[in-house]
Amino acid sequence: MENCPKEGWIVKYANRYHIIKQALEGLITCEEGAKALNISTRHFKRLKAKVKISGPKALIHGNSGRKPPNAYPTEIRQEVLHLFQFRYSDFNVSHFTDMLQEEHGLSISRETVRSWLKEAGLLKTGKRRFRRKKRRKRASKEGQIVLLDGSLHYWFGNKQYTLLLAIDDATGKALYGLFVPRETLHGYFRLAYKVFSRYGLPENFYLDRHSVFITTRHEGVHIKQSADNPTSFQIAMAELEIGLIYAHSTQAKGRIERSIRTFQDRLVKELALKKINDPEKATLYTNEVFIPRYNQKFAVEPEDKEKAWRKPPKNLKEILSRRMSRKVKADLTISVEGRVLQLKPPRLTMRLSGTRVEVRQLFDGNFRVYHHTGEIIPHEENKKG
Image (cartoon, rainbow, N blue to C red; front, side):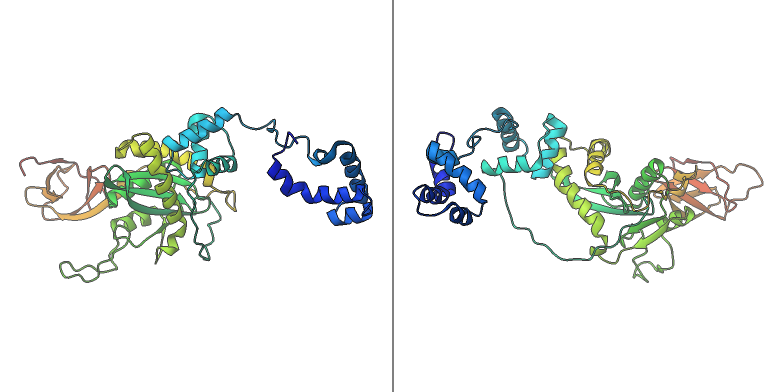
């Protein structure tokens, strides 16, 4: 019995040995013994012959108690446990397994890692609550619907930042992530510009009812504002012929909400691991390292292989801008965001004093001033104003 623990042998083989022993002593027939063990008579006779020659140990398989030839070395197992305990203790098993492959070159299955952690008492277990919900059907083509949302969270350090995220609905691919202090029009325009530059124009955006996207103040106390007045975001998307679909609840945005929860779980830990606490560096890491890995793991194939992206126009930055109307003063100046801009008519025949011009503030902070004919009016900032 050298290859098998006694307790394990007693539990697994005691009954089998007792029945075979009865057959050897002539108390039962081979047919009766085979029926009791639920095996064939031929196999029962083979076992009976082995037990007659070698005794009880004949019932034990030759490999019992031996280490499998394809088992991982003990050193690898210890290294994995050490890494989890002292570096990745707050990672879930799936994320930890990914990091072992990416950061340490250890290609080990998730279930093997899970069993090691469980045996070592390092795995935290908890009950999951499942809720039965009907999910919205995905778009059929990549680029048909792009989901936009922002998540205010402690992404790095003690200060909260907002991650603006774009997800393709058909594939679940994360398209771009941008860290900003808060959700603003210029932040979403910067995000849109990155998506448009990399992939093209989508057919539709799927949005919540944030004031950036849609007028939320109706006949307010301080400013009369009608729901019919479009926001700068709506104006820009109309010019680009991108449809806007508005979700009426958090549940309706379930797909991007689940993606954001995954980002909050995984990205926060990776940024901490890399000691990244700067929004620009975090944006770079997110798009160059985290998102490619995320897409490889979570993205799916679309129903239709044809893509719906369209080529963006050359004046994309001018379109993605905040639109304002200003009246030109007698000295050919206008006031915008606490600044005074001195206009310089491109020709003497262009009358500006007393007229209204359109001012566009680009997402990079620069201004463009447009005549009612659509012509750009050169300007400079009046420092004395």
